[in-house]
Image 1 (cartoon, rainbow, N blue to C red):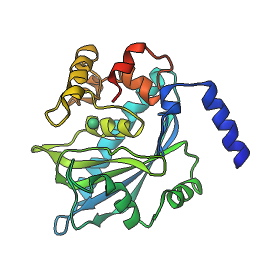
Image 2 (cartoon, rainbow, N blue to C red):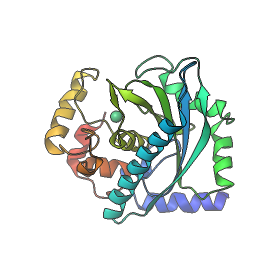
Image 3 (cartoon, rainbow, N blue to C red):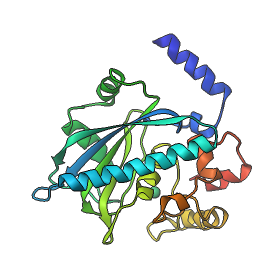
Image 4 (cartoon, rainbow, N blue to C red):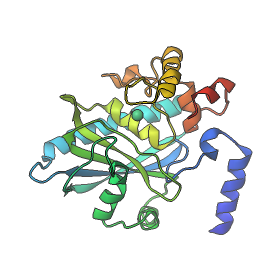
Amino acid sequence: MKILTSIIIIIFSINTSFAQKRDFGSARVLAGNVYVLNIFVSEPGRPWSLSERKAILKKSEKAYIWLQQRANNRSVKLKFINENNNMDLVLPYIPNFGERNASNIIKDALKLSGFNNKKKFNKWINERHVADSYIVAIFANKSGRSFAPFFSSDEVEGFLVYKSYQGIQELPSTIAHEALHAFGALDLYVDPMFAKNKNKKNEQATKLWPKDIMVQVPFNINEAKIDELTAWRIGLQKNKNPKYDYFEH
Ligand SMILES: [Zn+2]
């Protein structure tokens, strides 16, 4: 096991793209086999219906097909392995974006699914699959602003997508946008919730890469792109343009 780890580290250090060097939890480069565990959560008295869950899974399938195609267009092999917990976990309260404890949602949902830590979850996946990266996709039967928390290396990465946002059902584009965060993509849109400095950078990104999925999530996912900065951050593009430095935090 240890020998295998060193070989992988040597390969990564020869090929020094941003995505391969960054600190990560369980998703490093958008390549190879990516395992996704879909977990449905709801608040008491507001359960998901089976047809609603099916509709969400259909949307996420569209998102992953789109991501696969984007990777293939850049000659990167990518395959998603999707599994579902086949139940609706009831949480006393599902936090909204920016609220206290919002970033604990993945840990909490995994605990309720029987995985107390990353190691246990990783072992459970590896017993049945060959996975290069793994993420958790949480779907909440609630309206809210979807998000992906930032993680340290000892945590499982993932995201939370709500059923709707401002009265509109969430889209495959949103699922793809959030999944890309797990692999290191930055938000590139302008938003009053962001710091002034961040918005200044994002205004520039909007001009340079208006169709990038981190700039906007279109109704039709096929109108979105993974442009060069995002592609470089997630490991789909090896070459770095010095202008990317400007967009770092
Ligand atoms: Zn985002």
